[in-house]
Amino acid sequence: MPQTAIPFMQLRGGSSKGLYFLATDLPTDEQARNKVLLDAVGRDARQIDGLGGADPLTSKVAVVSLSSRPDADIDYLFVQVVVGENRVDTTPNCGNILAGVGPFAIEAGLVKAQHPQTPVRVYMVNSGKICELLLHTPNAEMSYQGDTRIDGVPSSSAPVICNYSDIAGSACGSLLPTGRVLDRIDDIEVSCVDNGMPVVVLRAADFGISGDESPAELNANDELKARLQSIRLQLGPMMNLGDVDGASVPKMCLISPAKQGGLVNTRTFIPYQCHAAIGVLGAVSVATACILPGSVAEGMVTVPVGSPMQLSIEHPSGEFSVSLEVDDSGEIPEVTKAGLMRTARLLSRGELYLPE
Ligand code: NQM
Image (cartoon, rainbow, N blue to C red; front, top):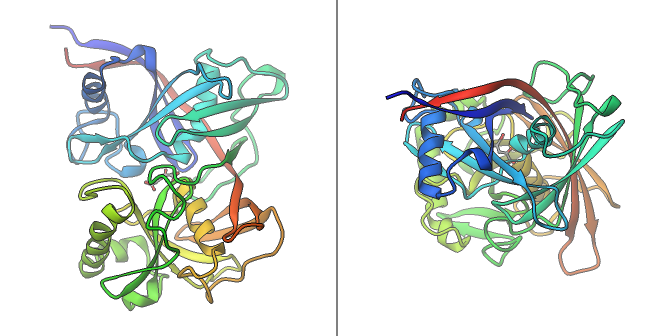
């Protein structure tokens, strides 16, 4: 039997890399679609029989289509292929892969480029929220050349500006899914926040570590990982996520005082391995936790006044700048917009062959 060929592109989106498909090139049935995506990316831990890179950051898929919504140009479904587990997770969104969705939409002919910039309004299917991307398109052509650098990517490229509005409760239904800014689990204080990504924020010092350790050191710390997993499993139902054993969310973010003049220093488990940097929406949620009075960050961070606030989230390979527009009039500060900069690059396009 011959194999089946389907069109695809591969892009680096921010500090992640993924396969991008038109929804119309994939089966409409969810189970059949997931089977195709597993065959495309790879089912085993090495992803030897697929195009994935055997790492959570390179085991990602975007499924893109024209939107029928009046407030969006395209719809984007994010699919995380869970490395080595022969299954996918569509609960979380991914702000890095999102940065490649705009360029893909232009390359695939879904959106017409304008000179010198092209706005693309993206409906994020996983979270039901909107992000507006602003792409660099001189002479009405997608351009990847530029001087913008983001930590986690060695080369510079054209900027992709990402403006998120109203992203609270993306997967949990509310900004503070447990109903509180502070909870205590296994005698550890935690702040659970979902502002685009469900994240549990904890103090590194409460686990007897500095928070400056390398991801490799933290990944080798089995006791720490077991303690984080125990807290995660108890918080899953409290955060409206149910049983989170094996799930991609919530992420677990250990914070410590900033070391490079930023707001806070982070080490984020996503959720079983420590991220080499930090996820986009993960960073937005951590930044949001840091500005909430009474969170685990209180006393550790100095929150700037005014709006928009420029907040630098330090991570193992640099820092991530987030701009938050904040409405201070209510009981707790409300983030009305989050802006950030990413880059993207088209890496390949062609046909992907699947077993019959
Ligand atoms: O938080 C990693 C990444 C991500 C997700 C993760 C992301 C986000 O670096 O929006 O970008 O947290 O699993 O791509």
